[in-house]
Image 1 (cartoon, one colour):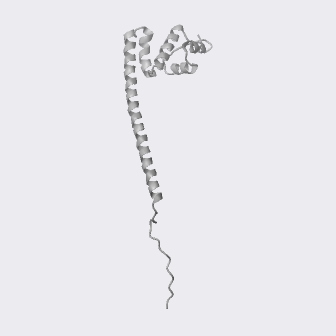
Image 2 (tube, one colour):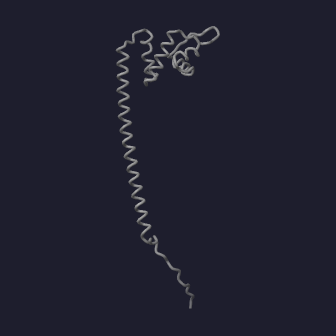
Image 3 (spheres, helix red, strand yellow):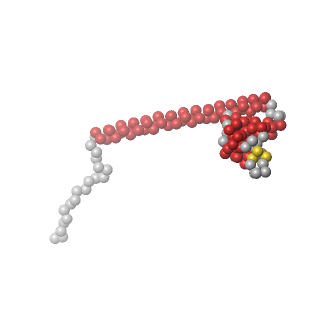
Length: 146
């Protein structure tokens, strides 16, 4: 099948298929005309790659599992283990993001407190007469020499 047919059937873009080929994940045959020719087995590989990407696996991790998938050595238990590890990674990321979110919320509260203090100080200064920062020197009369 042609690249556009494969893209439609697998639910990925033509651009993604070309990217996968460039990375060596897909090795389509070539027709005499130079067009790529994808087999039905390759459609299953693309679905495997696309589903793995959707749940957050890197292309490097997918590339490591693809030979076992192609040869039928990638078992249900292997896939289940990889997905459980992915869940643990996601949970760790969520924990880090929650910590970071708390820090941002605390920083906002700190900034608002500083702003209130600044405004209160400004209001107090506006009520009290201000003294010049430097003594005011009144001009003296010039003396003429006797």
